[in-house]
Image (cartoon, rainbow, N blue to C red; front, side, top):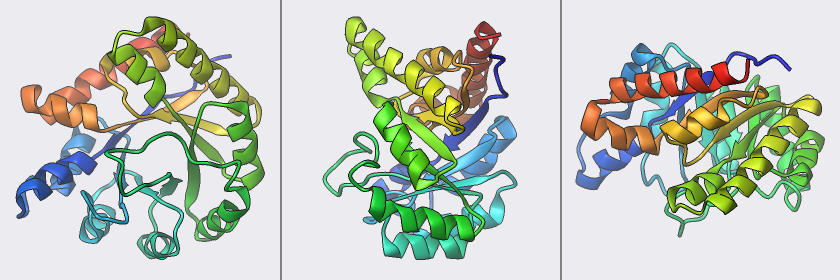
Length: 251
């Protein structure tokens, strides 16, 4: 199949993490979002966690008011978050799993076991003219459940693959990437839009960009870390180049 255009969403959560480590207003995640857009980001992602460990309510309101590109609001499926999302009216909401004890999102949303619980959230967000994606494991079971829930978009969790690459377990990395590859093809065949994210760096972003079904990558932590050394704008430009190189390989 011919490859579709590939978008880059920049997650600004960990700019807020650095700010919150000391308190005060700096560094400002909204300023980071504006810089990211200037450097070539197609959208901005921010996760408003229940414990507000990085992004806070004021950040979400300011992001919605300030940026000129789509805002992707990551959130757990709770009544409080639903109310905030409907009031904020972002372009999109990505429903993600959330545990207070985790350092970062661990695995995909349980869309199989949580099917009936998730249906009204997806329905209410859709009726609010908000596009809904589900952050899921790269498996046929999860994709079938997402389709049944009537979410138009799935974001494939790439964390297990990226971690295997990071620790040098290349046999496992090959197996995990095959899961991502098969899931992308299966989800697309089922009529779902396919995104991918979690743990991506330049090399893994380049590789996953070669999958023609994937139309968006959402990347944050790695780019905030790279920004310490090369600046945020340059890190984003390098990521965009890596994605373009990967996409060219699928043509």
